[in-house]
Amino acid sequence: MKRLALVLFLSVATGALLFATGQSEQKGTTPASGGKKYTMVMVVKLQGIAWFNNMGLGIERFGKDHPDVNISQTGGSTADPAVQAQIVNDQIAKGVDAVLAVPNDPNSLVPAFQRARADNIVVATQEAANLQVGNYDVEAFHNDAYGKHMMDMMAQALGGKGLWQPFVGHLTAPSHNEWVDGEKAEAAAKYPDLKQAQSRIEDLENQQVAYEKTLELLKAYPDLKAVMGSAMTTVPGAAQAITEKGLIGKVAAFGTCLPSVAGTYIMSGAAKQIHFWIPADAGYEVAMAAYDALKGIQVVDGMNLGRPGYESVTVVKNKYGVPVVYGQAWVDVDKSNLDQWKNPDGSWKL
Image 1 (cartoon, rainbow, N blue to C red):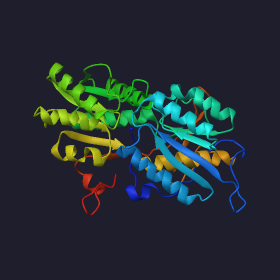
Image 2 (image 1 turned 90 degrees about the vertical axis):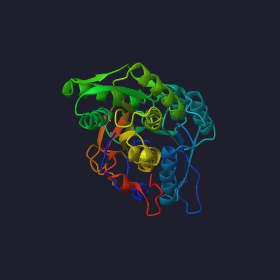
Image 3 (image 1 turned 60 degrees about the vertical axis):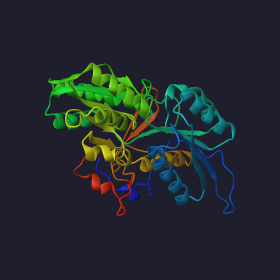
């Protein structure tokens, strides 16, 4: 998760005008109106967590805004690439018109996506800029730029010096690793007094694992100043360990997370800053990409896609020839603006 001054949560799931690729209408049933009725499904990394619960709101809103689409969201109970691949294959077997995904491991989905394209099923993803087979990948921002931005923010908070440790959800997760690549490059170029403790650590998108790994780090590196997380589970897991060891004010968690997950730790000081994009917007935009692909509409460089952070997108083909659409849709939250993400009743907007 990098990037962004966005609108508040309720704007997340409103309309979006998005992208596509030249895929002609070949599938679908005919509703009473006489037009095409498309079936689309979003397969997320993991069901039941705040991030993808919010993405589901965007998927739901897309369906309301497009009566010619039946759209739903599903995913596994664990962030297991094999489980996700099976779910995608099941949806292909059902004959959906478009399969959307936030892959745990894009490589593990290549056979399924090849099968989908062979059946003229549109494929659109998010957090998979290295997508090998598909119509579009949609990114809220350039991963390198997001990583550099997070490093700049962390460096400012640390006074430009100290020992830090990057985490990724999975060593196979392209977005997470590209963020860390950007962080490391920015540190090397601008912050010579920021030193990395170890090579990137994998927490399997599991808060308990992040907690346990942070405890190990704190023991091995008494001078550790910061943990930088990529998966949404890292900040709360690391902050829990920091709190338990009485190190608030000496060590802090940074990285991609949501206010509802990290808010308590930001208030206590165990977490310093979080960064994210609006999952519901991302889900909506991926669905729009697939929808437009079904209708033969193509996204072009510089297009305003109608959502904050997507006013002037760039479209770049990756090394496999798949178009990747980039916005500039990141949000930064710390103690100074945390209350903006609360409803009047004190509940979190996101």
